[in-house]
Image (cartoon, rainbow, N blue to C red):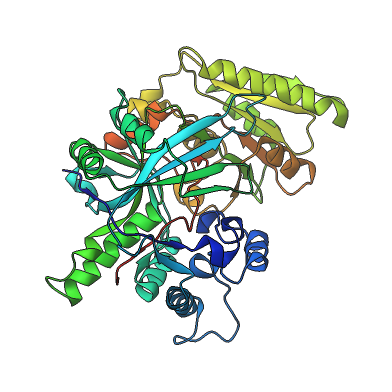
Length: 451
């Protein structure tokens, strides 16, 4: 049974910080070094000081990025920079709407992703209540655990998806979002983030009751979820019987059947591969894929050829789905679209995967194109020995044009139905398979374990 609780959040005093746009940030794992420096210049109270502070050459176990974050948090609470929402400190859920236009929407209308922020009970995956959907790496988990130990606060929300095709819960949220929001701020990508306090006891109980039978998928925040689980185990071991607060983490709950679910693709750049030869790759790939070529004779003709590739990839994802991906190679004036051959029996090639996994473009790219055609083993892919990732199509093209990569492979976005089917079957997608857009803004609310 899924258990969600309202809570008395800490959040910024907007008057004391001079505007939330100066202090709120993207999630820690999306903050580049350049973004970090920009955030630090915006305000002495910018949230990046808590979630992704600067390491210094003279750092010690007693004075480091984690202890400094704890110090900032304590100081800001004492100064009232971060304060409980009201003097009454009454628990609440926080209705959270994000209004946005998807990247590359090409004139599309704005969408609204609707959710609410609360505390969610941590559940081991084997309990069948909360499911991961993507492979993760251990380095980020260790970093987040050190931060949680030092600050004893859940500083960023885990993004969870539940299913509600009838949208009954969204109706409750819509009713609460009729008045002016407590928070309304635009981020650097033009996304409007609005938050309303949901204090009505009947509405809170209705949401709690509706959530009890939900199975949920972690859309974003796998590292934070596993960190919270590890921290809870530490609490149980060191303070038996007093770990109730550690059993809950800050979570944002969103309907996977809502209109605002957008998944962006993540493209793969390949570099430093020994013995790379595009002609040999294409010859090997012809065993498994039919290959279309879209040539261009000059830099000026490249965008038109790229549009032809993107149109071909879109056709592959409409109607009965056909696995496909695009490619651009170093020193070659053409884009390619590789589509699975219908006569190939994929279940024989990939017997350890489910039908849903075999339908994923990224799985076929990794296992067939990288594994069988390029000789990359799963460890090399997992450790990103030859791979780097870009979000935008044009970034992938630039990676080839600048000469830094040998090939770029372009992917279509995974469908929500694929993510759902794979996650609920107990399987996971390869790392960096999904990019749920937009990200949850960090610093809207936080949950301190010590009140």
